[in-house]
Length: 205
Image 1: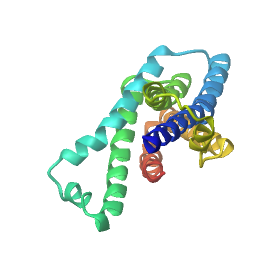
Image 2: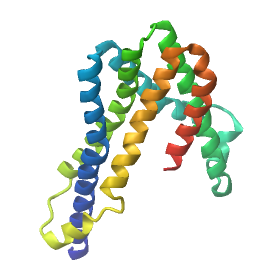
Image 3: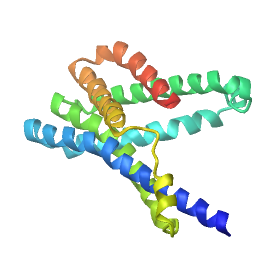
């Protein structure tokens, strides 16, 4: 019983730490960049919604690729092959997402202002999902009776400064990829490989 109480206290602290970390490292850079974009460029609901749709597609594509009857799916189940297979999966998903981004920018004739909000929309969904996940964990887990255990559980291996920098760069990458395509669809020759590499890099993180 004592071990169960300690485990719940530690897990509650960890869930709360993740929620705080998400608020500081993910939501803060997105909020700052969003406010700056709104002040300097104005707001674009359509582009933001297209960005959310692109983010949903990016979240679904890896699962769909795993369901395909190809050798990569079976390699993911083997410990020795799982690493390379995951990298190939991330690269493939990244290529498909960037092609979808190219399609959105081209078909919707996205301008530079809208390209900024398209990139912010992609990152917005990632932040919202993280906030919902960790808020749910905090709410559903019983509050700790031992504050010392909760403090130990809240120890977070990631520094806030490093996290803000990482997610700030991630948001800028999404905006930058959209801006390049808005400048010229031919820049897909740059955005597709860069976006695929970025997807694989984030998958490893």
